[in-house]
Image (cartoon, rainbow, N blue to C red; front, side):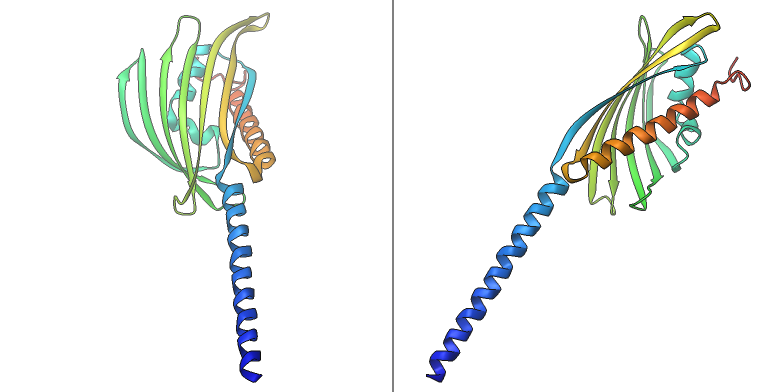
Length: 200
């Protein structure tokens, strides 16, 4: 009887262990899905900047101005560049401070070129945290067009941002992207206020 009871106890213990393994595996799978499965979100930003399109375009295209536009950037380096005024490409690595995850390492490639009716900056970004163990991607299409008003020439700025947001953080991801871009745009507009009048 005691041997039988011992065997029953061992079987129950084994079943509990197996049940725990199944539960933990299921939770791990759910967490992996929520964090690693991403949804592509598209956001459009439009604003006016008090400066000629070519001036605003040149300012944004120069990555040395990135810290003025995005104060969260701590450091950066240009890793490659080639082309000419009609089609210029370059790549950069930057380190950015994050509110909740320490720092983020960004890898970006830019394509800068004038078109017939506008100036364009296209970029593809890969942003990584946790020692590059977790990365997300995004892309940007910027257009700088002339917009004449009674007060003088202004630039119509249009941007389409496509970003991969983890489904578990979708709302947070979208709101942070909007917040950061509005700050970026406000800083860009400040650089071209009437009081500063840079590059004129």
